[in-house]
Image (cartoon, rainbow over all chains, first blue to last red; front, top):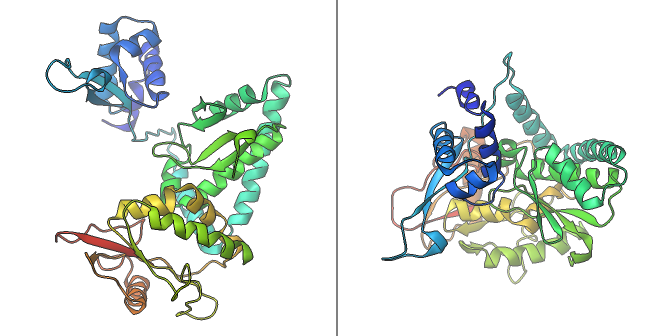
Amino acid sequence: MTEISVIAVLDDPVRRRLYDYVAAQGSGVSRTEAAAAAGIGRTLAAFHLDRLAEAGLVEVEFARPGGRSGPGAGRPAKLYRRAVAEHEVSVPPRDYRAAAELLAEVVDVTGAEPELQRAARSRGAAAGRAARQRSPALPDGDLVTGALSAQGYQPYRDGGDVRLRNCPFHLLADRHPPLICGMNLALLEGLLSGAAVTGLSARLDPRPGECCVVVEDSKNNVD
Amino acid sequence: MAGFMAGIIPVNALADTAPGFVWRLRDGDGPGATALRPCGPDVMVNMSVWEDLESLRDFVYRNGPHLDFMRRRRSWFHPMAVPYLVLWWVPAGHIPGLDEALCRLDMLRREGPGSAAFTFRDAYPAPAVEGAGLPGS
């Protein structure tokens, strides 16, 4: 399948809704759960989920209900989770990824990380100020999750902390971790200060499959 | 440098208990290898052996305190214009010496990544023998 036909699979409102729901979950989702979240029947959900799987947008796994095993544990349930692969289409063709990789390499070699972090902090601060101006009265937590969602981080609450399901810089971060994770941390620190958020702070805390940064409740920060 | 010297002790301790960790270089009774200067007074070295590449990668790039330590490296170290990190496979039980590490680093600098000297970005699989370990320097 070409990149454009993979993306075209999402050009159906119901399928898109199912994909967004699956992508936002931390673990595999059953047909029944996905159907309920999208407000459609289980058969229709199964049809669309399998189209998403054929396109490679979601991956299929099988799990015993409730983790049971052995005879009488029931049939393994088909679960769907967001695929790792990235898809990008640009019309007309553009290749910002190659440019970003070259720039990252140069920053690495020249040691310009402090400058990169400074630039990232000020970019984050501008985004934070803009978010605060749009919603001056919004509670800090909601403001932060809204701003992070808008930038593709897929935030979710974990107690008082905000964790990020998606790394918007995944490929680059994979190739230049200290550089890109440091830039990302500076972006998010900037965002918090620009939005005048005081009870939350950003810290590097990488977890498999998630962004390297956690935005945590400063009161719980014992480090 | 005080920040680096203070930070290296807990980070080294984290390595000792990390999954897949086998061995790391020390300067005599010191907690790390910071006193060893085989490449000149301004170059510090570290070297360790791990069971597999993913264990090492998990510690270096996916361990919060270690990643944060690396993020701050420009507060303490100048960038190097040549490759300064090299990986290679060793037979299980073999503890490499500094001379071996410097030879592999030289190989990487001269020939680029290959099966005998490589990097995280251009990694090579372990040779097909039972139980091999991986040092990083």
